[in-house]
Length: 247
Ligand code: ATP
Image (cartoon, rainbow, N blue to C red; front, side, top):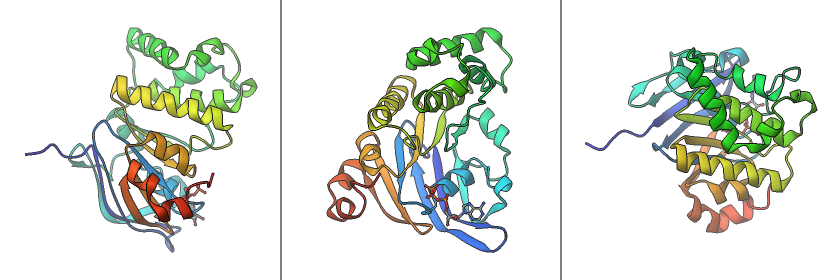
């Protein structure tokens, strides 16, 4: 039998505040070791999809009302966000959530909260610094005084401190200059290739996402309207007309 995909989202419906239907039956598959992009404009439902997977909807007064989410072949809808982190599923939220008053290194160490082995944590920190040398240079700076790009790197680095298997990355390009966006995506690909970390990335920047992902899903109004290999999507006439050049 073929191995099941790492993540299998099957027909999920999400409702906010008991009445606002936002996801209208979304299905997607993330293979082990892949980089999969969720594309689409503002309000298409990308963030909601990631929140459904990492079980972060409750705080937003949202819930999954239909469908299923399977990770490594088992249902995960009832696991708490921290149980998910322990199993290797971590979300990097939109807007680079770093603690402004902590240093970069302190921020990274907060990512190790589920773990207790100090030597392992130290080794993990060194590994994060090899992927993000800029964070090493800035490790003693308060996050508030670092650049947007450094804060995005810090948010990703913090997620890596949990030793994830699957990283849900929400809009990494937001507010970053194109060159920095490219730098961040290069690091994502490096982590994917060398550490085997699987990524599901929500992005409005279709150009950049299709350049770095293997596969893409395009969402509109709470539905997947198209999906395919990233290279096929990038050369598709409809995609070019409606999505490329956006973001
Ligand atoms: P963006 O790039 O703006 O984050 P998105 O594709 O990630 O867009 P979502 O943030 O998932 O889209 O939003 C999808 C829809 O759900 C939007 O219409 C939004 O207004 C609505 N929505 C999101 N969060 C809530 C909430 N907590 N309560 C009610 N409606 C919400």
